Length: 136
Image (cartoon, rainbow, N blue to C red; front, side, top):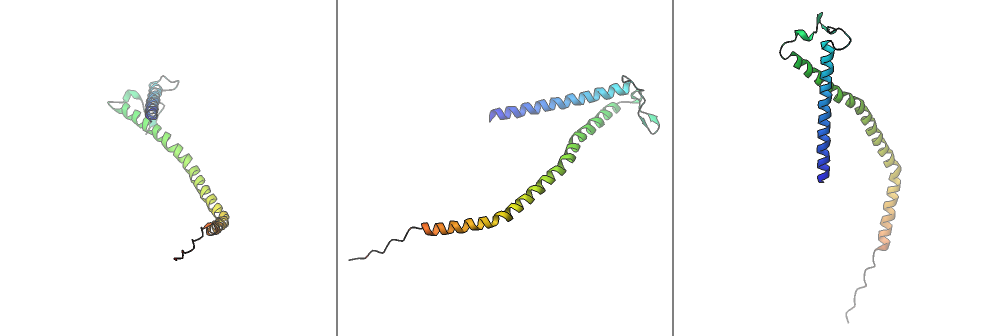
């Protein structure tokens, strides 16, 4: 029991560390891309015909961009697997319900036959009642 708790805590820690590492790499890539370290123009993103240049950012703009990208990545990592797996799960549940229905229809005569055989066997195996004792 104790080893399972330790394993779960270790897995949680490793997962958290990997998430933080992925977030840091995402931030580094975005920062490198927007600062011009990438082989394209630093003003490659435009919003309302204004270039989105990091030199125009003030205060918490960089943090807001990082938070928005991190939130978008987290939603992408959560929503896409759910969208892909939920229809598959629904199909499996419907197929299992259909299989259970078919098996219940096929096996119902066998269950009835087994119940009758069990009842007859129980009646046959019932011990005989002892004869009443006669008093002298």
